[in-house]
Image (cartoon, rainbow, N blue to C red; front, side):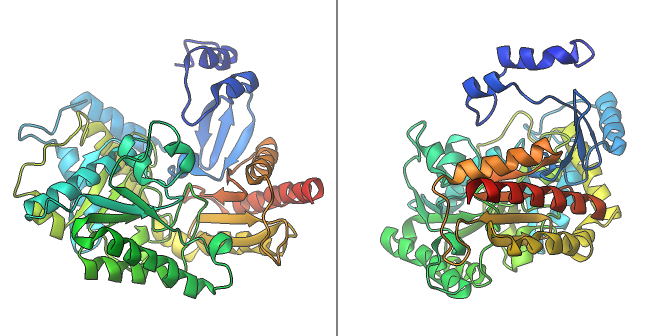
Length: 452
């Protein structure tokens, strides 16, 4: 596409015709879009030739890094052979079936099926419907309520945005839809008060029990949560949280859904976040790292418990591009690379610990109240007063200030309020981690002088 339009004109064309996700278009067009032209490894390059360390892996997703010609070659070969066919009407394609086998091989012994979608948001809509069909097939059609968490994120479709606990999303479109309820998040730094993290983990998990008592467990289909909250700020729950959640779901007979869209495919140092925390979900939406963002593909991992029921009935749901053969080939090649280069093990045993050491070093900074890191996924909490955990009056403003300072100096991080987030490619090097730490420190130093 860039061959047909002068690169210098792309920003103007974009402003004239393109509506961006989650953007104030008036402000964006006044500032002008940053136009990214190329990617190499963990680096992206704009049309002016400026290089940036992408310590956010695109949007949590480019796990194997940019420029992997193996995927381009595999995609081209599949497009020559069969560019598209659907999976409706009793048909499949070789890449689709092979991807189903491959992705479930890493999910755990009791997860052996997958329903393919095109994104994490579509995956959320899929398991949402599947849960209701499941309970209806078991003669419990009244189990139609869902529980999720405040400040969680599950996509931006109607069901996804409703299940997510982002107030600014609920303010548009009369959301959430009915029968969706939210409980507290395991965000100890902001909400733990005088409790220890371990005490808080149990306390906030038991909000699920209280909500089930209120609604009646016989009316609730499922509880959904991210193993580690992503867009909410890379909030790592206390060690006591997930065991208690799993206990409650099992005892009260509701489905446990782990949103693995961000945590999946090696980011935590395990293939999936639920494995890192030691629990088994009934369903798990996936996307992002499934293809490392090279082509759109997602899905819902389905436990044997749920699949054994769903596969005995009609599930009237699907997408034109469910199991698209070219997207499936991209995902297969991506998973082959992750396996053969042992990237999950690398995150767990090598670069993950190196990254965590560099990240946790910021706990000594005057501006930093807390750091959290699991694998190659990290959050840094800024605070006006470290000792009292006092926050800044305008958390979005300071987060944006630090993020912009990093970008100006060649580092891409994300800011969620007053938390800085990192999620680099799994192939990031030690030298690149050092650059990230040096650049972020300079930004924090400058912010402390500006905001103290």
